[in-house]
Image (cartoon, rainbow, N blue to C red; front, side, top):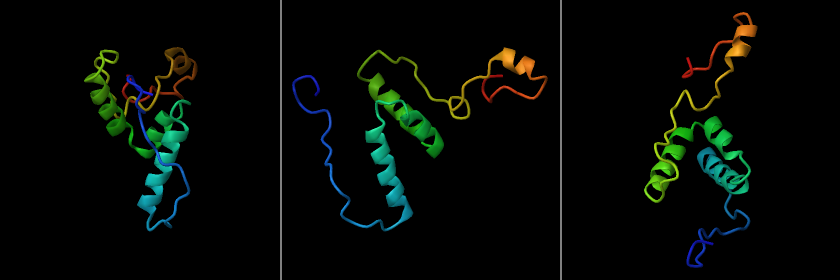
Length: 106
């Protein structure tokens, strides 16, 4: 619940009553289900990256929250960088040229 005792969200839970008419509608439903199911389990970020939605969703969230709170100043998702973690330099050095740094961390 939010401050003041009102619900933060009101989702209708039940079976889907209409068959899928196209692939886009089915994907939208799957994305929404995974959003609810894994919201607090740390999987959402990886779904957003896999679907190519991370840039839009994370930056929209940061803009929305940034207008409400000062907890996330300057947060910005950078495509082709923030999807990956940097490879530790010691691992790159030990690989004798097999590993190269992920894009955006050079």
